[in-house]
Length: 275
Image (cartoon, rainbow, N blue to C red; front, side, top):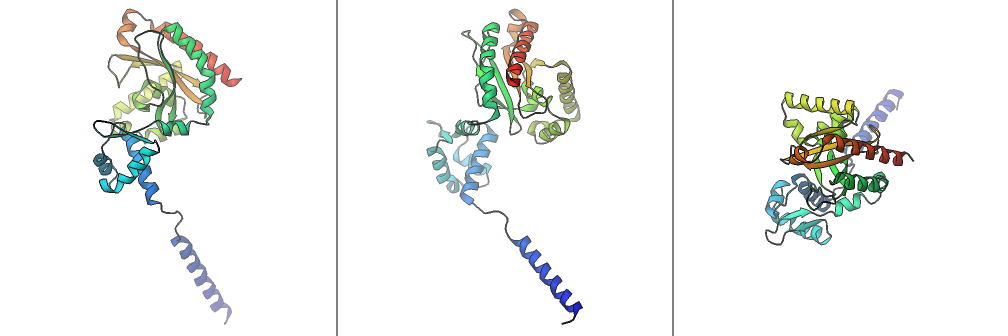
């Protein structure tokens, strides 16, 4: 065998090996696990209880295909089923597991006392939120000492583009990170050019003023006041907010006083984070 022939054989063997490597599957197929994750992700995306038939349709499967998985997820505590309608919703187990050990545990700990002081002084509930899976996630809440007030439960998710706290968090990100997150935002993707420009103008204003207050887009008659916590474009960035009845701002409360109290609390929490 001459040199040219040996080279040709070598190249053929090399190409064959490359093809075999490309054809070799890189991932294992786990149908049951995929089915369970599809259910959890679908319920998370929908945000409201869903029937077995609705879940099956939503993940392109038949009701009989997902029956055993629903039973398993319910027994393990990942989903809950309503007594009357029999519809399924996510429990807080995923939230609990994902936040067992995170950098935000320390933030929640150091922020709790300043937030209690804020709530007592303003007589309003306050809540602390972060970005989680491209959404706003409420990680801590201090209830108002008043008998009647607004309450936002821990573990609740909201759209970033539709909330005052979400816009405040977006103002803390680099332009690249912000655009990446918004490109996946279901609301933002449906907006017209003018609506997108309004959002960016609001984010720019927050960056300059260091706070935002506005009427809620999700709940009528409510005004949200938010201020950033932590450092810009860092792993430990959050937003502290107070939601009040808009009528109270006109009759009993002063927006400037609430903002001053929020800024004082911001300074206390940031100082504790740095220490």
